Structure formats: structure tokens, C-alpha cells
Length: 389
Image 1 (cartoon, one colour):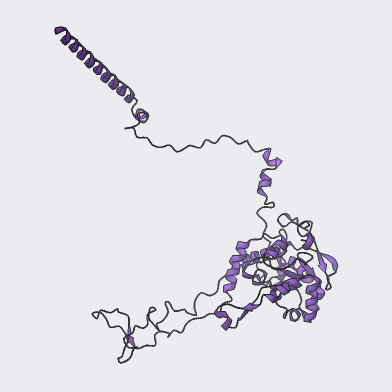
Image 2 (cartoon, helix red, strand yellow; image 1 turned 135 degrees about the vertical axis):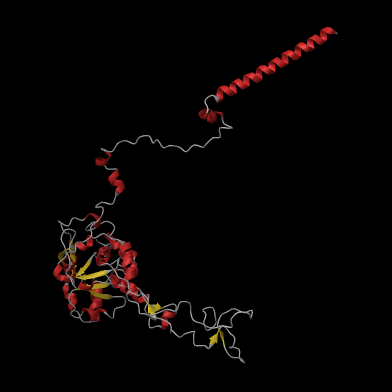
């Protein structure tokens, strides 16, 4: 990717649909920042970026760096205390023996007592380390490497890379032979990494909390990570630059590639280290070089994308798919109906008893006829009564 003024309009390759048969070219910059020869892009930069795998592996790896700690096993139990038992209207907590001072009779041993032990005292044989599957570690490392070549992810992580000419950033192997910090600063300035170093330098501050008393008094942001193949003085040259870290390409560490479990570390590669990645990780079709592995127990092939094109809406709306898709029909979704009471609803009663409708009709007609006969009989009596007068 090109960054700076042209980072939004020009790109060298597209990660999710890269064709490894036509390998992309990356510019190799000299120590003075001049454009040098081209180098082929290693296949590891086409690996899928799985932030969930990176975060999970990073959490387990960071736990493996802990130092065991525990409280004294005698802490809180160095009292001559015994419970008073029942019958004295006090709790059964052990109480300090003796008399004549304020400490005697006070509760002891319990975690709710003053000068008592803590609840569940910590032990040094706690389960400190976490086992991580080898394939998961490699997946997380390849994901972190792939994310380090995307400028937007590097900027999102907080690095200042506006002046960086290209990603991934590769410098010539002559950088491995520098021995002075002044020369290292000149190399960083030639590739536009000075702003990121200044950002780390200005972020140095005193750590909040009790860690400042425990030999980690200051904190600062992470800067560029320089990956090399052969150390001919490079480590000593860069070790005094604020925020800059160095790492051998054969010992890539996820804790450095994705500090805090966040992908997008600003990585500066030497040419020899950059070309060595193909042997370490291989590609989607070619396995890694087994002779470079510490444990030669199987060929390793890079993970591949589940989808070569993740633009699902564009796929669905394409002419090729829409031409064979059936038109949308009517949805015969059954609607939930309310159960009706047959004692109060005639239609529900008729479904249960078809004769109920005739029965109710006959009952109505019978009542109507009876009413008419009563009215006729009453009218006849009134008429007879009037005629008798």
C-alpha cells in the first residue's frame, strides 16, 4: 500500500483476493531512503486476519510470562487463639488468649478478623502457565503479520505513519550492519518513522498505581518493530531509541507483533528477513520449509480465506446469480389465531357441533311463536271484555 497523500487512492494489492501465481512486488529502500530494487511479497501477507485468534493466543502467551507469587503460609495464624465455644453469647471465631490488654479476646485467624489471614491464601503452585496449540500460535502470528501491511490498521493502532512511503516497509540488508544509534536514527528518518518515535518519546510518563514501586515506574507507547535476519550490530544500535524494538525473523513473537492483542504493529523489515518469510510460513499452496522448523513433525501450510470475495451484497446482486435465481413468491406464513370460546362464539360452536345452529334457530322460532300466541290470546280477551260492556 502507498501511504501519505496517495494512500486513499492507490494500492499495490488487495489482501482478500490476492493471486499468488502473480506475486506482487514491494519496493526495497536503501539506508538513505532512496528507492532500490523490488522484492516479491511473501505469501504470509495474504493470510486471513483473525483478531479473535490473535486476542486469545496473546492472552495465553502473556500469562506464561508471570512470576509465581503467594502470601506467607503463616500469615494471619501467628496468634495463640482458641474458640470460646458456645454458651457465652459470642461467635465461635477463635479468640486471642490472655487478659489484661486490648488484644486478648479479639477474634483471630478468620478473614473477617483484624490481623487475620486472607480468604483462600494464594499459593505458588497455582496454574500459572497456559498451553497453546502450535497451529493456533502460527495462525495468530500470520494474522498479525498480514495486518501489519495494511496502513489503515497500523494507523488505527495509533502509529504515526503519514510520512512512511510504502507498506510493508522494507529496507536493504545493509541496515543490519549499523552499530551507532546516530545511524539508526538516520535510517528511521529516511523511511518516515521519526514521527512515530517522537510520539513514543513524548508519551513516557509515570505509571499510575502501585506498579511504580515495583521496578516498572514508567510507561510509554510502542513504536516501530525492526525485524532482521542477521544481527551485525543492529540490536545495539536501536536499543536506546524510545519505543523501538528489534526481533529476529526466526523468533517472531506475537507479544511484539500485536501488543495488547491489537493487530497493526508498525514493522520495518530488512530485505533478508523479508525474503526469509516464504521459507518460514510458505503460502496457501506451498508448504513451509521443514528444514527451518525447530520441530520437524509435519508440513505447515498457511490458512486460507473462507471467502475470496467478502462483498456478499455485490455477489447476490450480480447478473450471473440473479439470472438463475427464482423470483420471490408469496409467503404463506401461517398467522397465529386466537382460540375462541364455543360457549360465547357461535361459529366456534358450529365447528364442534354442526346441529347447534339449527337448534338455536328452532329455539328462537319457538320463543317467537309463543310470544305471538300470547299476544293474540291477550288481544282476544280484551276484545271480549269490551263487547260484554
